[in-house]
Image 1 (tube, one colour):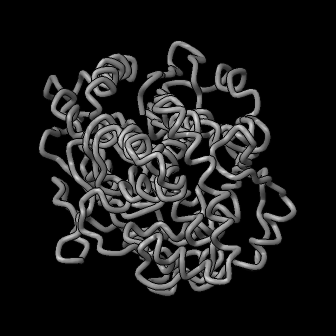
Image 2 (cartoon, rainbow, N blue to C red; image 1 turned 180 degrees about the vertical axis):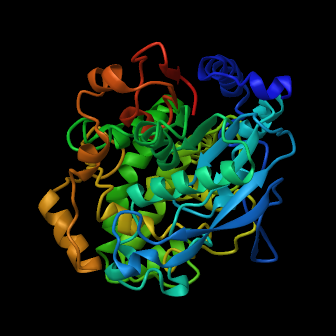
Length: 459
């Protein structure tokens, strides 16, 4: 037997190297986004990024948890693989796919590729069921609750477990240690996978993973408080202008010609039918920019400059004092939608789902119930949350009621330190405090092998 096949790395050695590599990556902003670009637009069409992975398709069963005949229906789950640095017995690094096309996440996760040579690691990116090309019912996958009922985190984790076991068997490398990686929802899945399938993954790196954003574990205002703080830190005037722009928007909409004026003001491709369209357009720009406020140019959600929150605030602060707050807010939001200067008008309604995210609406209406409110301290208009109203809305949309406390029942969350200290191990939680999701994540060490990496000014 070859020597390298006998001396498999333990997670403690992998953990130490990952901590060193990830600390460096935080400084150099390698992890999110990585050195690869997301989909770009060329001649008005979306062009998929070139990534150093081969696409494969795995025959996956529809339902892992029942034994009814329909449970055995097969669909083909997409995964990406890179074996450039791998040798038999070496580690396997698996990305637990998020709510979108797996190519998109592979194109924006350079950290795994950066560290693969050091570990001789096999890299695998697994697409989440009901996203991208992994559609159990093809084009009819989103037809109704009867098909969407198979879309949840527990089925997704079981998919990953089955696929990883099969892959290791087919590679004749059963002894290869597996470490799972993920960011945002994918980070939640990575942490949960380690807890639910410790016999398959020896460790997890969960980046920006808000596993505590459920029930009343994290204050409901935390997300929008964090977004607002990002803008306030960049410029108090910027924060005040955005905060005051909503009242001006409401004032315009109250006029008889309000919607026509808003359509002109926002350079809409078609006249908008509701003030909510303009409000949501602005809202999305400010929230998403805070989520991707990277220190380098990036193209994860949209093409954006380095430190885009700061760039937005420069636009606002540099505007004429005579301009309205709404016009300044619009100019700042335009950076998010048109940094590449390719858009002649903006689609405030009927937006296209270029990254295949729409399945998240179902998950948010069933298991992923993360209560959020907006207080007067935020730069957004105040809003409340009601479990009852949320259930009524979901019932109208999908015909099902949410199970708002299922995630904490299934995966835990309450008294997380005490619980994980008793039975958890080998998880790295990484967070930049400028990321609004960080407030729902684990922000301090729980044990010697459940480690929190926190960058105060990081993403």
